[in-house]
Length: 266
Image 1: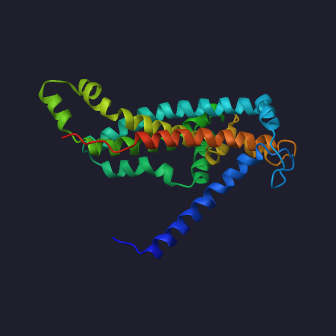
Image 2: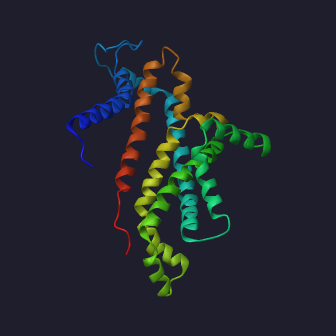
Image 3: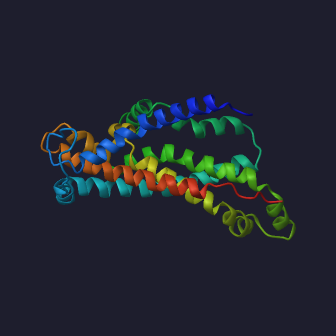
């Protein structure tokens, strides 16, 4: 399809307009993290790293960062195991209710976060009688992190085909040997990409976390929410928000590089 010069210019203006609408507010947050004014007056009249030093010295921010890293790491590990097993089961085998199971696996990431949070809160406290803690946050995050890993692994399995796995079985290899020597090496980049996306998704999640946090557990997004309206903490919150942006962007960028199309098996 050939586009006229006028159409290309219009599309370019729309594209840059949308990108500006998305990313300019992020740049404002970055600028405010070095804004010498505590009231965040705009435009900044200088540059200071005082707020970065205060953020580094904030015990609450450090504890929240460690908690977020712990939750994201454990939830990602659970998602890698369960998401991979589900993807292999649904892509390589046929059984009754297969399509229904596929829908149920994907559903948690499609539901509004507030609905998932309320459901999990009721499940933990009302049905199971479990007190909210760090582990309830981990379980809650794992429910939607599984979908990210599942989608990446399932897409890779479709591209791989089954020829190499069939050849391995014909040569006498068992299911686990075939998985270890044939399937897993081909899934490695998909697992890394899915794991990084799941980590980023868990690290900055706030809605579900709000309903499932307890026992003194405080993740970085919750810490930001609790401190953003305190005048003396506003500059520090901007610094923590920049850290959150970096921890979210890097895994997504790496996952995008790892998710590049590979030559399917013949």
